[in-house]
Image 1 (cartoon, rainbow, N blue to C red):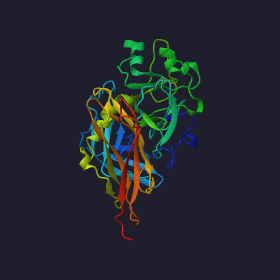
Image 2: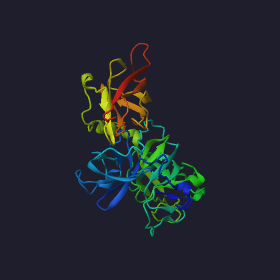
Image 3: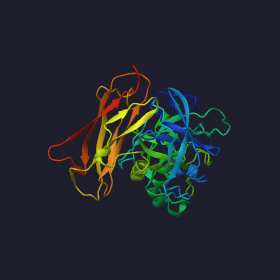
Image 4: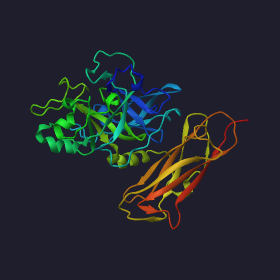
Length: 400
């Protein structure tokens, strides 16, 4: 990905295996490719809708993982594009890809960024796009391996702000659901959003970068959570103002990039993923408090959260934070640690939290781990209750 200040051979630009980005994947379909991000259940990958604009939902995508345990390829079972995708203006440019088997244990799973304070914050982008530099743009002659690269930038505005400021001078109509960043080189002449809409900023120096061809669907992270999904780049001029260093749309200095604002799509992402869970409990008596370990990959076990305390308003969001905790079972060996926020949306009164159990062929006694649920917002657990804890038993199925 990513055109960067320094050449792609500079190790500071590499999202190397064994680091924090082994859950950022390459998605191939019909001879083209993009980037995606493995979500918290280890079964779904979040990416851009426009990758699939010319294929059907039953088409098979190939998802390629590069992790510390090697490269692994998994086919998709199906693809779901958000129904409101606007192909003309690239609004609502999101899709989910379901894997035909569990993702590698060595691949990170990522939680969604759920706050609406993205503007002004520095983010980290990761992807498999064609490399290049800000001075020259994409290396059109590059024919080497697909590299997973990383760089940083800052969200300066949203799409609606850009459209309001430029009006008919902007040939498309982005909404506030798009996060916009420009590609700065430290010179005010290439400060696109400073020149165009007075959102001044000269960049992050050697850390600055921009998405390029092949990064579509790739993540932007804040605090390790997915805040944006890469959608497109643009070169904008206004009268005598030409911030783009070479006037070509090639991810060079002076261009802008747009990411879909994940916080505004969390309901569609959450509820679409929940609808695909296999054998998830909907009643207390269906909850499995013991689960067979299995021999390989991971198996989902579900914790069911139901509203039995006090909810401030059933039409408003209710959220809780959660985290797994070791008992005799050890995270990374027996199950995959997870933490995040579960949101119950308008008039929902229950949902599940999935935890992946790691299968192996090693004999060991039955083991337990815990899930703690805390920090309710929009309701309470009941009088004087600040935390809920559930326990699970992983049942050995190997011979001593």
